[in-house]
Image (cartoon, rainbow, N blue to C red; front, side, top):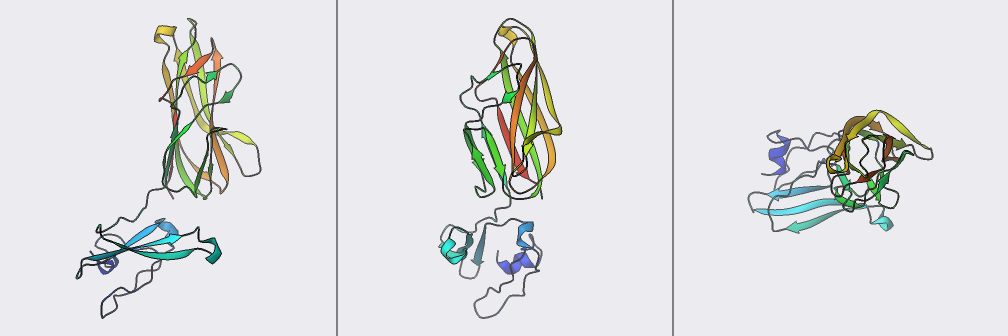
Length: 230
């Protein structure tokens, strides 16, 4: 498949790429749409006649030159356009205590981060900073276990901090749990919300015991997933 094939609309139009690829002739120009629409980080340039490929990517870290495009020969065939913008972190350790005073839910491990320039994970404060404005789907889960024989109710919530501001609870992003005795006390609180994010916003998960005994985070059952929708 060549860029010409994509521009014809057989697969998908390339946004913001107005170049001509050919051996002795010029292919028709691409439709000009802002490249941010597809969030392309790399693009395969493939000459089907020669079965040769090259990867065109933007290297923003070349700060001395203000960023630059790099064309790297490839022998591995066609490369996909990276369109997904995803982040996930979770808690591998467990043991964090949730009490009747609201506290931050622990997250210690980043599993997926397709765009480290957008998602900055702080595993000391259990927070994720988002450095690109847009609409995001944010989903969290909090696995808790009661630490005594007392039946306990719990609540988790998503909080957001605007750049330079204070954390505030996100409306409509609460979840609740009910924990029986210690032998039957496990429960997972879950919530998903779609919300607009401004550049530099930070999000975190908080938890509290509403009534009953202290709760303990369960290892490998607490996490946050963030996906950019537009």
